[in-house]
Amino acid sequence: MRASGDAGGRQEKVIVGPNLAARSGRRQGVDVRTGARRPAEPDATAAAEFAAWAGPSLVAMKRLARRLAPHADPDDVVQDALARAWQKRALFDAERGTSTTWLLAITADQARGARRSRTRRLRVVDDSAELPECPTTDTAVDVDLERAIDQLAERQRLAVHLHYFVGLSVEDAAAVMACSPGTVKSTLYDARARLRTILGDDDDH
Image (cartoon, rainbow, N blue to C red; front, top):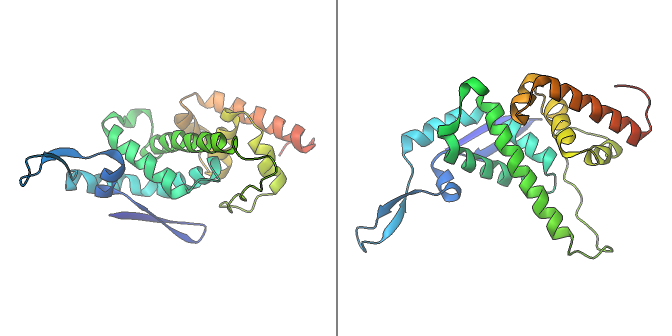
């Protein structure tokens, strides 16, 4: 099953449902021909319910993946996040946040992993080697601002991406970051101050 949404005029499609078994692992069964253990498909009803539940969050998940790991394939990051969410779905607690904030928190973890993996790979690249360009993001953002954001502390960077680029409220960003709304507000304040220093801009936008 595929769930889709429209982000910036583009049709986003990410595979969810039974195909998650390829990444998240399947229930074990027995091959009747050989008697050997074999992977079995996840329950179709549960997979369909998961697809319907996760579908409305896919656009936000992909947008966050692009922001946090711009050199990674956002579809891969989202697929890994969905596979992880499928494994952990019994832990979701609606009283602690929405399905979107829960899925975005998992996406952020997967994106950070993709970013760290790329950093490790770049350590073996010669300094004179030409690196691939960052792919185009959802919004046309000034290159200097992008570079400035990249210099923020990890928590500041996450807060900026969630609030200003994914469009979450302070309260929802707090649910993703597992902190209080007040902490998000102070983190955003510090991030803006840091960006003004990096960009040499004294105005508070």
